[in-house]
Amino acid sequence: MARRAALRFAEHGVRQVLDVGSGPGKFCIAAALARPDIDFFGIDRGVQLTATAAALAAKLRVPNAQFKVGDVLDAPWHDFNGFYFFNPFGDNSASDGSDGRTDLIRVAERLGEASRGAIVVTYHGLGGAIPSTYDLLSEEPVGTGQLRVWIKNRSRAVGWYHLDYAYGVSRAPRRYFERRCADRKSSIEMATE
Image 1 (cartoon, rainbow, N blue to C red):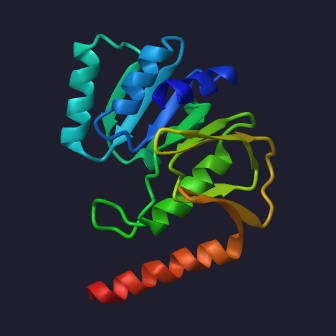
Image 2: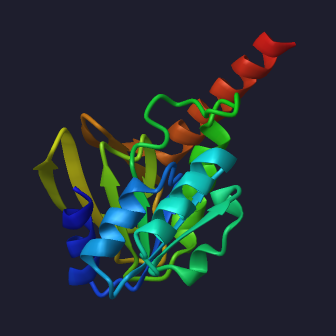
């Protein structure tokens, strides 16, 4: 799967890929080995996962795979023309105890800010919204899921999002999705009080 995704990035001239929630670095390392002409940068909140990824990349001598601990939403997304997601919001919850809905909206905003021509590759779906400025280029079964390739073709968004889930892609009005995220956040806040 990682080799296939790396090939899709290369076909579209991508040189810098951000792996959103890179975990132990499996994707970045495998993709970097397959495509030494592309730099893969993984960010994850997990200190141990990131340390494992960095150690493995060093042991395998993979100079084009780098890892950092942190909130990927604080990274300079404008430095990248490729983005990789392995279902980070599939269960609509985050591993740090938050509901993940605010992050879903922030990811959609960050993707909306990307340059025209940016490529997004999802595996098992994003688990949320991709702005209407993107078009689905291809969808192919790979391993246990679907590998989808999206391209940003427009600068201006319209009033809907693509919803990219493991089971398929659909559209939802922008207000519906944002309201649903806000309602979910409110119900979780009330439950924790």
